[in-house]
Image 1 (cartoon, rainbow, N blue to C red):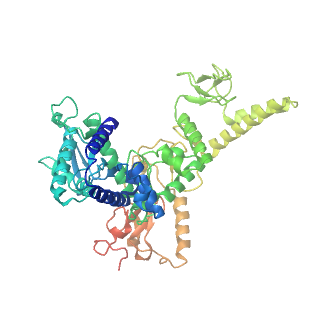
Image 2 (spheres, rainbow, N blue to C red):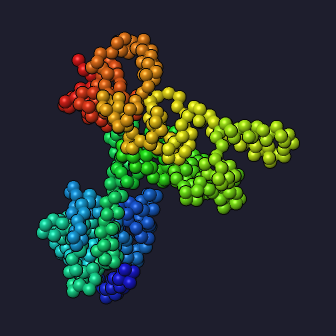
Length: 552
């Protein structure tokens, strides 16, 4: 490209030497016309006008000086313009058997030099450069620019701005699209390589092949769509139900799905799960796709993100059925198959993976109460323990006490074996590892877990377990009664006001004849009239919509 530009410049200077005796008055008029055109082009294209002459003109305009004083009269004007190509709606791009629809295209670059007798007698010398068009496309554009100059030549008026307008608005329709209205970059005859086609020397192609050209087009289209999304102001969040969120305040949580939420809801959700250690539940609320790490890195501070990574690693290791931790140094250990035996690669301690005591082949494990008794007897028999032995003893006492407490008051997760305690709510338990299990029978639950229970929405279920115990239901009714004291609802809600959540089947009360219900159990928002999830309230309850937010 640089060699072609230098050749064009040399040609212009040779022609200048041959015309030294031309009318000097006409040359002065041409120079003034060139200065005016450069001023117009720099003002219109701003930073998209590049080159030393464009910078000199830009500085002159900014300082209020005359362009002629800021530029050398003996120097030929030279600049490069970056021209955006506009399309109506979307364009179809063909590459062999693949078809793509795009709403934006990459720019085309027009580099030009003004000869001494331009615009009165000579046309500008130019080069067209593109990284997404073929030789034949650019050659056809060169021919059309020449034709535009020939039509304008008798008038002796500047032509470059008219060229840029044609490239911007009409080039697609006039020379780039095929008979079917598509941009075909795949045909061998278009001159990518080894094709017999007489190309114009002023057409500079920087794409190596059609595949690279298509990639450039798709990248430009993606950037344009992203810019349009960032300046939009009508985005919705299905967590907080806001429907007027700016695009810059919206986050796509996973590359595996297209669901987006406002940055405040995503940040709050991420911080809650990181602080509680339930990072495996940090998934898209609508499709359960895991959050992308780069999304979390952008919304969490340094300490929070480090805690997320450490917790995620620990939870992932905990979910491995054959992995345990050494009782001495907490190093991960792979359990020997069918032996309940582990040997730490860090401290070489051999231990039982069931009770975490030293390996005791042939004898049964002690339960938590027995282990506490042994430790207490050991303490009474050795009153002068070393500091390290005392520390280990206290850790063993704490572990044994915790295990005994879990046996008395809690349940162990059937997936990771961690102890879980229930203080209120339903019998569907969610472990920190993300697994669901039943508090009543200890069975691991599949799917969302509700099919296990027989009292969900009157369905039989797959077991005899109930989702809510009677005392839990009575406690909930007392809480609801307390809410009704302030007059938000009648003391005895009508049957029509008690509505089952369409997702988790929990019972909800519709207050003040409001059809818009937010489930107290799973936070889902839905319409009580049509029984559908509501993502955008302004659309679902619009005047022209069938559903009304308030019943009569």
